[in-house]
Length: 386
Image 1: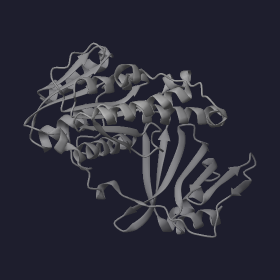
Image 2 (image 1 turned 90 degrees about the vertical axis):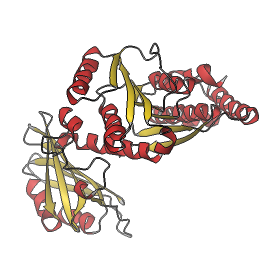
Image 3 (image 1 turned 180 degrees about the vertical axis):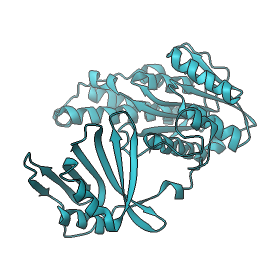
Image 4 (image 1 turned 45 degrees about the horizontal axis):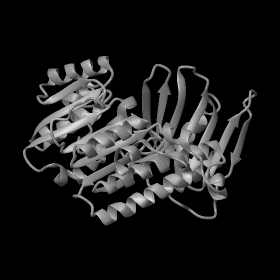
């Protein structure tokens, strides 16, 4: 066990370490990764607790192997080591006999990029500085410390703002912005976008955030009122029925389920939103429609898990094409590390003007050909591609 651990740490090929089958039932599991703090390498261990808390501790590289061997087998009965050159598994029997299944290739060294400590990152919203909405939403304490279990949410917020800032020249065409957040949920991103454009960019915003959940909308409305976020409005209702005031400068949604994402995109297109940013979730519609033609497509869809992944990708690819047909320049981007959430694709579309009829017809023909090949009729096709 020590040899395997030493090799993956010394050669910088460790992607993730997972300690499971905890002796202490209050601890669900512990994950580990290499990080850099002030030029030194540390093993960061994060323990996820049964009560929802997460506890992180960092150990210098020189102490990392000793720390893991101290925990196994006394505290954990299984370790999975994921590297850039294969994986290894360490199992502990009922009699505390340790078995190492090592499938890590050692003929080359494919080093993993080691993340620097978050405090060294140049975040749009800096780590360690108190921000009113982050405190109210339970991401920070009053001193600006990010709660361990909310660190991935903090990274997600900053990553989203980075992707917004990349296209802000297409969003900002005046001092008074109109922004939509459809299917806003608890509205972490709603507050972040408002904060970015008002507090950082010094602009005036009218922002409508819509969701069906009454309790969530009331909570977010109360927070906005408490913070004095004028112009940030929370509306309880169906996004289908929501009346958009004028062409939005930005339309966003995070993890709108299944065709709710299509409805968001349709609303953005129909209202001529300058920029649309949407992270899809739960691609159920395509799975129920797929009826491929031909042996090649049958092979692609033979296995359920691969069929699901294919359906997800095909759904989002066709969404991108509908946006292109309607005059948008489109990018499919990674929102956050897929290890934190598998729903990490963000569709970003920037309005570039009406497409020529010839180009639009060509894209429509390509779209229809794909739909015919797989026997599908996506929601967004009926709305905007015909």
